Image (cartoon, rainbow, N blue to C red):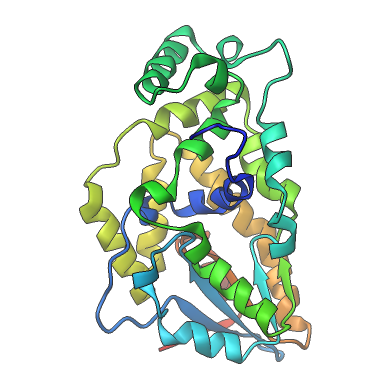
Length: 298
């Protein structure tokens, strides 16, 4: 049951990455003739890497992945993900600790009374007692409520998880673009007011429902990352600060590391949430601005 001590805490950490493409996780739909969400990036002075877009939770029927993922993996010496895989393992307890109020404090002291009353009624419908949910900060409640399993999806079947396991099986080094602390701070660094806004936003039904989600999944398989970035930004239209926090700010932090990979003499396969690749502040556009040649794999 939600919030029970036996919850798989490591899944909460993976869900930080899942939030990068919230809308895309609602439904997994196939697209015929898919090219894949993978690019070859070439540096003018020499050096190549591959950049791939992930959906962080999928179904077994979504496999095999488009061939471009296999081509990039086979051509690469190393794998780079949002967070190093071994760092994620067992880090859920630290996340829950960060999202839990000290003894004697509770959610009621940090949100508007109207928000608290609404949240209390929502959890009552789920038969979760107030003593349980009130221990947690709003941002952690968002992560706990956003369960892919409720939509028939699995974090363990996400693109990055699949590639991380394959890298381990092939003794291929896998590193992270950000530390666990940086990854978690996307949520844990929110103020009380910001965290409350995110929780309220999570209760608003997404426009267009499963039809929009199917279009997003089709866009992922076709590599239409601009559409994915627009959709993710749109999902935070009532809280644009968070859309920038989860996409643009992290993209800018990652860019120097990605460029270092291209200069390293090794070939990296960099895999991040697909929405990070599109838009004017996406990784692909920034790399082009910096003089890199970018070619989508077919």
